[in-house]
Length: 482
Ligand code: ARG
Image (tube, rainbow, N blue to C red; front, top):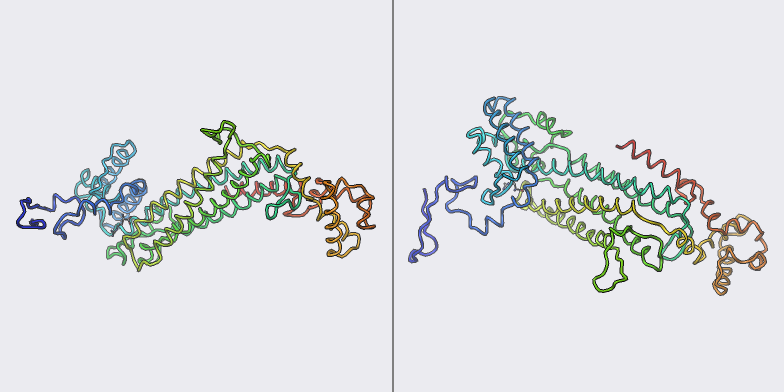
């Protein structure tokens, strides 16, 4: 029992009597006064880390079973812990669990309730363990499950894009560089570029999962434990591929969270680029696509408006996810080994990244599945801007002209076409021959949009046949991974 008289002895303030039993936190005996209310709020993480509950319970059960297997915990105690945890699981799922800020975080809330339910057995659970290795384990388990879910969503989006790509293998559109008409491509080819990006994204997530999938438990606070624990058993029970091999690293490492956020930021960046394109293509000046109405909103003042809110929000939320990556990098950059309370700040950015990415991927797949393409508008746009000029230069080179000369000849032809407001493909043979006598009537095959497209017939090229083959390869790869 310790008596604290507050700030001034001369005030009428009641002295506060603190006993170990009245302090709900786990370290009461060492402390002379209770934690200030504002400190309690400031340090508490239960408001957000409660979403780790199911992983915390799984980790605790694996730990308890191991403690029993090596003779540290009796069968009766293990039974009481298992029963208590089953009950807690139910309470949490049904919403009946009482979460308390006084108990700071998810770990102490659950342990406290377990002790209410299981008595001394509950108090024995924390043998050979610290919250430091506990929380590191929980977050890894959480992230592993999140990655599995996100990978499935990523695959769904890839499938949708593949469907659209196959349907549009021959849908000619202008390919752009510098956002100026460059050469004809197909809409299918364009979409496959995004499938490639998402394929790398999936690889990054899988790679991150591999490195995250190691067990920190056993590291205890930072130095390991003197109990004869069996870390491999726990790792196996929790589906980890192995154990973290340095106790200091085990409790302090958050690379997996950073790697994940980096991968997530890149996924968002890819979708943000596509969003930017959708927004442009939906503008009547392009008029290439229509998004399903259920993914658009109107304006409260301008009755004619249909706005691409979803792509705009994806573009905006990319900033948010990029921010989380920077937050985590900054969180880690000055931390000495091993665990520091700073690490509690890893959760909100990580959780929000998962939530944002999950919703974005789900909504994007639906939106892209409902995308309507205006093929005529795309073709018309490809007819403007002399998209087949390079084809004419290549044609001349194949007839023996050096490329630089051909470039010059075509530049002059384009200038002529521009003055006339006519595409190269609609100039007459005589008009074309005025620029080079090498030009014959076989030139029209290469000047047409479809001829130009079909001629890029190699792996990675825009020819419709190649687009179909690429889509088939990507489908096979998807099937092999899943
Ligand atoms: N809530 C804490 C966190 O998220 C758990 C670990 C606390 N460990 C400690 N030594 N204070 O990091």
